Each structure stands twice: as C-alpha cells, then as structure tokens.
Length: 491
Image (cartoon, rainbow, N blue to C red; front, side, top):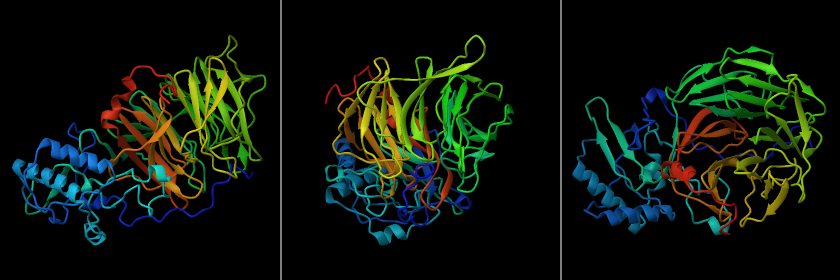
C-alpha cells in the first residue's frame, strides 16, 4: 500500500461545459425562502407542450412520474405571467410527463450560460457518473429544475432585466450552490468540517501542492466567512485528519503533510480561539491519516486509517475530559465478532449506540461492505446489502433513519450521487433531486445543519474545488424527529 492510501488513478468523468456560476451575470439565489424559490437568468422558450387546465391530482401524478425517471420538457419565455398562467403551466407539465416529453440536447445547449442551472445535469446520466446496478437503474438521482413539474413564472420583467422564478415541488430535495462573502477558504480537499451552533468550522486540507493549518468560520445566517485568528499551541498544516466536535471544542487528531504522518491530539476552543496540544500519557494510536473519529459516551473513538505502509483496522478511544493532572490517556478497545478489513477513506456514522462503517479502501480495492459496531457490547456485525455499492472518499450523514451517502469515488470514477441507505430495512433508496448538483467529486467535507446538508470543496482528479453546496432536505428535514428504531428491524 502506498503512502496515504493511493488515490485511484482512473480519469474523472468529463466536466460538462458552463457548470460554473457566472457571477458577472447577476445570478441571484434566495437561500432561505419558505417557498423554496430560486432566481436565475431568463430561459429560451420551449413551448412544444400545449397548456391546458388540470387538477391537483394531475400535478401530483407529474411529480410521481418525475420520481420514476421521466425528465419533463418545457420552459418559459421572457414576459409577465399571471397566476392563471402558472396553473396552466403546471398542468402542462403534468401533460408533458404523461406524453414523455423531453428537451432535446440542442434546446438544452441553446440556453444561456448565465442561467443558474446552466448545466443540464442528471445523475442517472452515463456521461455524468458510472451506471448504477440494474436494480437501481430506473431511478433518477438528480433532476434539473428546468425539467421539474413545478410552477414557473417570470416576474419583475422590465426592458433592462428579466429573471425567472422557479419552484421545486415542496416535498422535493434541492441542490443549490451557495454564494458567500468574506475571507473564503482556498480550494481544498481532505479538510475537516464541523458544526458548532450556527457556525461551520473548516480546518486543514490541501490543494495538491500545500497543506493548510488555518481555521475558517462560516456564519450560516449571514453566509460570511472569517479566517480565525487563533492563538495557543502551533498546529502543523495537515490533511486527511479528523476533527470531532464535543460541545464548543474540536478534537483534532492525526493527518499528515507530504510524507509526514501525525499522532498528536489538539483541542480547539471555539469560544476563546485557543489551540491546546493535549498532554497524552501512555500509549496512543500510531501516526495515521484517512481514519475516522466520532464522539460517544464521553469518549472520542478512532477507527482505521493508513500509516503510509499499510491500512489499519484498530479501534482506540480517549476521554473528552482530562484527568486530575490535566492529561489525556488513550486506550485500545478490544472487540468481538471480527473487525472489518483494514481501510481508510471510509465513513463511520454514529446511529444511537452503534456506529456504521461503510466503504473505504486499503489502497488496492474499493470496498462496498457495511459493518456495525455496538458500542455498549463492543461486538461487530457485518451485514450484506443488496446491491453492494462501492465508495471511498465519500461522506455519510445520518438524517433520521437514513444514511445519506454523498459523492465519492466508486473505484472507477468520481460520482455526485446522493444514495440513501434506509437503516431499518438496510436497503438503498434514491429520490428525485432538483436544482444544480455539484460536479462529481470526492475528498470533500459534509455536515448537517438547519435541515440542509452542507458540502464543501473536494477533488475530481483534475480540479480542487472551493465551492459550497447545500442539499435542501425539505420534508426529509423532519426525519430526525422519527421515533427510535433498530437498525435492520424491518429487513
């Protein structure tokens, strides 16, 4: 195994043209609108579907068909459209769905590059990402808003400017690229991202040339970035480390820079902006990166990773409070049931008193297996999920009883899929997602805040990103309020 769990060398999928937002084009996004409104540039007319009145059931039927894989055709031309026209257009979308109307590639290509959703992207497209297993091939993982069965309107039209207001169906999930201000982080991959209060903290990472040791803070209410002027002990630049939020503190372990691998534990106080290098007594984990950490029961747990020579599958933990002398002590945890194969670039997601370990790589193979560790009994359970989906350098976030697996590498190509593992049935599911999805990538960072998944940075084999996307969960944002469940209880 090579240093840092060698990244797969297959070329990334082609990048569609016109994918970047045109800041000079006056694109404006309403990030926090209850009506889920998106404003973009004016679209070219596509009026091949006749408009006629319809009922609510027709509109719901259109939404259902969209979720079954149909891309609805139709657009709007510049000019004022009243509410009656909106109703007619929604009915037209339903009719278009039944007829299987699709925009031609030529019509899509003719639309302006300044349009917010200028990249006609569908996750189910073979050109955008590798094909899914046949059992999932009929499900659309992303639907462009221009093809959505949603009401569209042109408002505020004037001689000088026109913008299009589009709404996704209320229950639907929605991608949006966020516009931020202030001291934005540079392009980076393998950074950490944590939520403390309403702030997002980004630390470390690298741009394929140099590593960082800066802390950037995003105020999610104002969308303003700040570069933290931290004090205290010096933290070396690093990547592929872990940062675990425990209250207002971040516990940062490991990572590396070039051929260096670290085994130090640092604690950042987000109230005082002070770094402290923890005084550790006894034996601790070996230097490593690409591992995972999580917080449970007063401990920060660590699993796996790589030390530059081999992949690891050991389990360690350290108390989040020092002893009477101010020291921290690591302890290796003995488990039963057989540990997962050694790996890094995997995900470890806490679900109640269990942690779900999914995917990863040992530097030679991309894994698609799933293992559960009961943290009360310290017993591993290995579960087979059909179909097995391989991923490394992805993110996995718990939302209710679903594990949202976003982007990553499947061993052949980078992806921008959103895969949902329903934990009570242990089955993969997909949903239609509207908006403009991020380009395929891995080595990004992701967290859940305020009913949205926040995805930052990453790498696609050619480019290191500095963008921030949100996946608006809509009705799925209420999933954390579901009653307690047992993993696999309805399998």
